[in-house]
Length: 108
Length: 89
Image: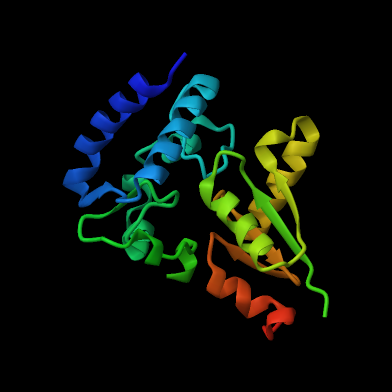
């Protein structure tokens, strides 16, 4: 069964959440497709579209903070990187997402 | 000069894959584990180790000659690689 319909609905939902936060989908369309595919599978396996690049603790309250889009829970960190951790979303003014390094919150 | 490199990764994470690719392209040997592909106690032990090393739950977690780099950050990788003139920890 194709995951495309669910990926399209996630794309539609996420856009409405992240735009007011000053973020957009990364211009890297291939990465968007790969990450949405991973999220749909995580949703099918674990019940929610978790961030594909963060580990789950098993504690629901904690794990809800990495359900995509998780920007509100990591705002200062992501603003410092101008991207979210998995790179699905970048700041509205970003045109070259490959130039944005990943670094943990205590290294900004 | 031999570098000791270990990558804690998630199979769902493109940046974990890019990290392994970077070391492959740089012809640097490394060990890696996809934590989410393990199970039971083995998974718990690997996950706990990654979280202890990184202080969070973000992947990839890369240990280079004892130094920890969290995220796909080639500039940081180079800083710790002896074979590339890095500090080497």
